[in-house]
Image (cartoon, rainbow over all chains, first blue to last red; front, side, top):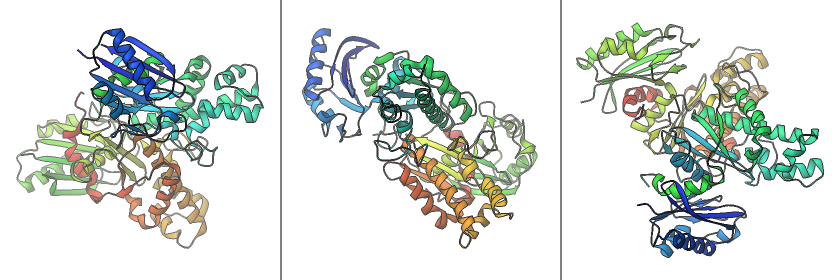
Length: 290
Length: 290
């Protein structure tokens, strides 16, 4: 029987779970630090479910990485993880195979294994940043080194605002939560989270304009995915989709105006666990020919 | 032994070939008409190579289609093919399985089977229109109904010039050969092909500006493919790549400024036969679960 451990390292929170047959049997969540905290949490959930050791560990992280080597590369948001040999260190600690992948790709695997389970779809995170994972013909589209799905860094406005990645006018710079908060501070003169900005849009025209422009950019990105990949649907998760009643219709209307056919959007039904479940399922979905 | 027939229906010319072990053993090329001309050409090449009948026929066409049904849908550029039941009609005529796919996807299959043969790449046609085919993990990315790869119809400028597809600011409307010729007529006041416009750019600043803006748009589209798919490289074919010495550096420079990493571009080494060879190889690369 599978004794799978999933680890979802987030910018603020890390989750660890023991997963059996698609069910989370035990879990820990704690503020993101480094690998020692993850190791301790894995030992705790193993004790809780009574597994002597895991059969596999899968780790998702929102960071640049060398996926084949299982190493996280320089990432300002995860200072305790820079250069960490994730698969080697956890593999030594637990004596089992460990794999590492991008967190949005893990979320797509979560949908593939336990959620939407379709042949052709895209998973898209709309949160502080914007990321994606692609499934085609029932298989993950990994790209040459596992970095495919970087939908947040497609350039929509070559002369647009600067992006944290060093380019200009990336989708993430136009519609990501962090950039929305930055623009709110600059244009409205108050410090607001993206979520607060959405609430303010109910009565403030300037906030409404910012939100509308972010929704248009996201809709354009979705239309681009639709034309390039012809998915059955695009599944969204991440903090900003919590305001879907307000944002969803605007995103969908923009996407439909820029795509042929009728892009279908849906929110994940796995909630915040989609990436964690996907990390646990990651070992079964790695590229077969690496 | 395989006795494969490939058919590449183009906007102006149709090619038919008998292909054995990656070699074109006999071929016909003629102005595009309808299915009777194709049937006759197939009979001629069969006689020439001495095959009593083909084992498979693969057909590529630059048209909307119902790929599963093997039917070409309404396409103004191919008046003799509208509504034609391609796989049914040719299957009845030759008593073998027939498959139909988008011509740019066939070209990607040509690269996969006989050209670049890599795991992760995109084939891109830069011609009258702009089309693409995607290979991920050594498999074609078909999309839900075989329409994936429509890179020409990603919207780069939501308020840009109208596209033949009904939307605005599609890559094809900004950089396709037909739209370049239209813009040349409007802005330079002379009727020029895209190829002639490229020649004129050597001494005419207005022509140079048009070409530069098309190259920038294509570079942006390539950068988008690079971020979304992380291919090993992007392989280009089609009439406009005949002027690659002039256009290539501009396209590459735009792509590099809008993608992280270093997008690698290469011209197909299979020349005009890439789609024809790919059509012949199509039956071996169809979705396995349809």
